[in-house]
Image 1 (cartoon, rainbow, N blue to C red):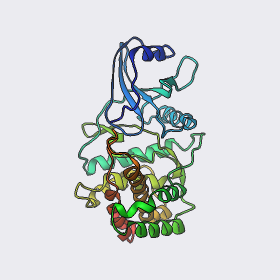
Image 2: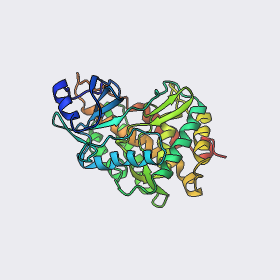
Image 3: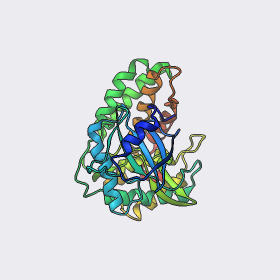
Image 4: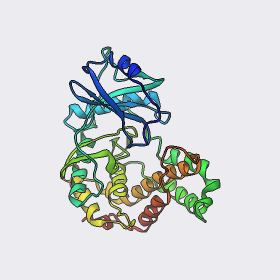
Length: 320
């Protein structure tokens, strides 16, 4: 469910007066996604996505997110393009929420990916990293080490309600990552949330990337580690090294990894798994029963974390 704020036709048409969109023909809520309220609009000129930014998105970050999409699109990256208002602003206000109109991106996300799709993803991710190198704005990753500590502080006391021994295991893991986390890897703008439902395909061809609302500045290889977790585990939670090899080879065909990045990849994958475990755990413990949001099982990412803990080198991800 991803419509937290209802809108009506009168308010919507008033909002659209500041845009050159043509006549509104219809609109409907979009059920997918978990962070914001999204609507598909049809006008007599083109379809559009309307996004109302809910409480998890800081309005102060919108110039970064929307400006980044504009920047990447201008450099040939296939991603949604924010429509400017008549005053040049990239967002306005609707129903008491910041709201933006975004171009409609053709394609669908894959319910079942294969190695060839992972290779295309790797190529697209590397191209996006290169295109973002000269983006002038900066946003720190709020869900890196400090953010993990903050989330864990809010969840640790109840962690053993989810699985016995969890409080001790995660406290030890977090302490290790704080001690060993890299400090000098290549940095840039990363997507930070490149799950399958944020990558569109037409047939077997990647048609674009969406949902930049976790984008930030961090280690480029961390973005690749996020994709290892999001794309390379099967439904039975087993790791698919063929997919991982294709993902990394696709990435390196555009932007070769440094020796330091390759060495750090298992640790970055552990950190990525912990990040998604902690956000899921917090939501699992704090989302009230009966809420419209579907809670995601944090133990899925605990299993991924344990797998990466056993990895001795990046060669186990298929790297030569």
